[in-house]
Amino acid sequence: MPEQEEVMLRWTKVTGDQIVLPRQRLSWPRTALLGIQHVITMTGATVLVPRLMGFDPNVAVLFSGVGTLLFFILMNGRVPSYLGSSFSFIAVVNAATGYAGHGANSQIALACGGILVCAILYGAIGLAIMATGPAWIERLMPPPVTGAIGCSIGLSLAPSALQSLQTDTVSLISGLVTAGTLMVLTVTAPPAIRQTSLLIAAFCGSVTYVLGANWLHAAPPVDFSIFRHAPLFGMPHFVTPHFDPRAISMIAPVAIILVAENLGHIKALSVLTGQPLDRLSGRIFAADAAATLVAASAGGTGVTTYIENIGVMAMSGVFSTAIFPVAGLFAILLGFSPLFGAVVTSIPVPVLGGLMIVVLGLIFASMIRLWTDKAVDFSDPVNMLTVGVTVIIAAANPTLFVWGMPVGGIFLASLAAILTFSLLRRLQKRSHRATADTPPDLTLPPSPEATLSIHGSSPCNTRQVRQPGPATATPRS
Image (tube, rainbow, N blue to C red; front, side, top):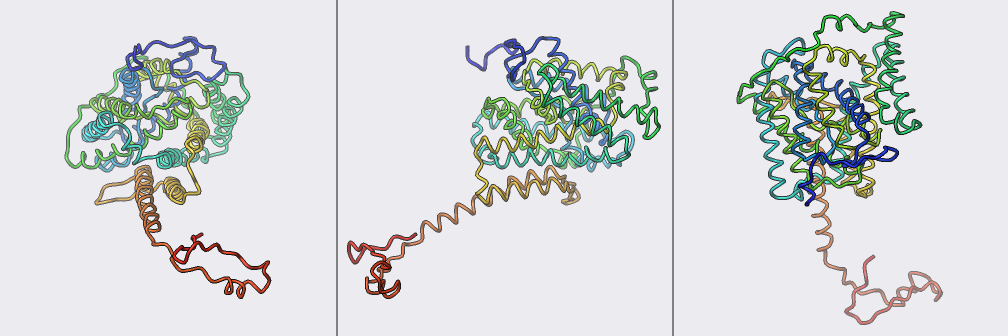
C-alpha cells in the first residue's frame, strides 16, 4: 500500500525512552496527558490573540481544536501539528475594523470576511504547489530565508513574554521559577516526567505566584471567584462573515506571511523528526488554509501551525501525531465550557511568560540547527546579510503604515528575508559572470634578465618561468 494511502490511525506503540516519531505513540493515558499539555501551551497565545482583536476567546479556542482535527484528517495523520490563533492578523484586523483594543470588536464580521478571503488565497498557493511541485517555493525561500523567518517569529513575540515578568517582583520570581523548572526538567528528568515538564513547570510557577499575590498581597491576586460564576457548559458567540472590499484588501495579503511562516515550521519539524516534509508543503498549506476558512466562517481568528507547540515537541521528544486528535477534542471541550476556560485562562500571565521564554528560545535554536543541518554557508555574505537584516527587523518589531494600511514586524521581516536573499543572490551571480567573462591577461612574462634585476642578482632569488612559446599567456592567480 502506498505511503499516502496508509490508514491515519495506525501507530506503533513505543515505551517513550527515545524520540517518539510521528507514526509512533505512547500509551493512551500518556498520549492524553501530552494532548492536554499541548492545549495549555497554545492557550496563552490563542486566547491573547482574540483579546487583542476583540474576538471571543472561547470561539478562538474552539476553532483551534476544530482546525487541528481538520488538519490531522487532511494530512492523513502524517504531520505533527497543532493549529492556534495567528499573530499575523492582529495589526491588519485592528486597522480594517477600527478596533481600539478594549472590549468586544463590533466589526468582527468584516474581519472574518477578510480572513476568509485570505484563507482562499493561501489555499490557492498550496494547491499550486501541489500541482507544480515545491521546487519554486524552495528557490524563493531556501534554508537561509526560512530559518531567518522562523527566528523572526520567535524574536517578535519575545518582548511580550519578557514584559509580563517586569510588572513586579512576584511576577519576576514566578516567571523565573517557571522557566527554571522547565529547563531543569528538560535536561535532567526521566522521559516520563520530561514529556509533561511544561505542565509541571506551569503548576510550580502558578503556586509561586499565588503565594506571593494572594497570600502576601505583593502583586495583583488571582481571582478564583470566576470559577463560581462560570457555567460548566455554554455556547460561544458565533459570527457570520461580511465581505468588505477595503477590509479584504488589507487582510488578504497576510497569506504571504502564512506561507513563509509555515515553511519555516515545516523545516523545523523536518530537522527535529529527521523526516523530510518538504514534499508535503503544498498539502500542508492547503490544510492550514482549510482550517482558517472554517474558523473565519463562524467568527474565529485565522489559525496556523503553532511554533509554541513545535517547541513543546522539541522539549519532550514526542512527535507522535496521535497526540493531536486528543488535543483538538480537548480544545473543543474547552471552547464549549466557560468554566474550563476560566480554569486554564486563570494561569498567571508571568507563568505563561516564563514558559514562552524557554519555548521561543528552543524555536530560535531549532532554526540554528536547521542552518547547520542544511550546511548553510555563513561565509557567504548573501546568507549573512539575509539573516542579519531579518532578525534585526524582527527584534525591533516595527509597524509601518503603507497607504494607510499597517504592516507589522513579522510581515516586514519575512519580506526583508525574501527580497534581500533574492536580490543579493541575483547581483552576486551577475557579478561572478562578469568576472568570468573578463578576457585573460595576454601580456608576455618578463625575460629572465628582467626577473634577475627585480629579485636580485643571485640565481637563488630568480623565479624561473616556463615559457612554452611566445604566444602563451601567464596563468593568473
